[in-house]
Amino acid sequence: MVKKYFELKDEVSEKDLLEMTPWALILFSNFVLYCEQRGLPVKITSIKNDGANIKRVSKSHSQGRALDISVVGWTETQIKKAVSYFNNRFKHIGAISFSDGQSRAIVYHDSGYGAHFHLQVRPMDEKIFIDKKKGLLAKTLEKFPHILKEKIKCKCF
Image (cartoon, rainbow, N blue to C red; front, side, top):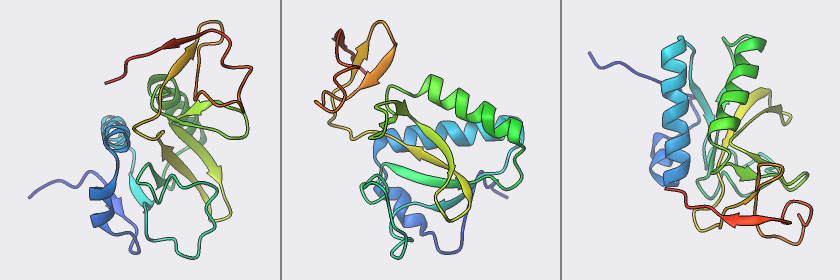
């Protein structure tokens, strides 16, 4: 019998996994491995097309750059450790927040549909820059001038 490493909420289509970007699949695969090594459950609650009535803040889900994971069965400590682990190791591909310009690969929040992890990556064609002083990653947007002072092009993947 083949072991299942993650589950899908009933409304979630497994076909949507085929439309995830390579970076999103890398992040998700690492998340599944992290959970497997720690005996933590992984249940996808949202990928792309399951939320026709859900008000999205960004296009990351519809573009195959994000998915939501249930935190049922996780302790507060386990949640905090996972957020820290993934944001430290995958911030170079994490999505950029419009509110503060920070790169985050995982967010733990309740957007009105229950607390969950939101795994997210930036678009594949987006350039990546590093601020040497702050160690932050940012898009070259005028919206984030405080981050773009000393930028260095970074080769990723």
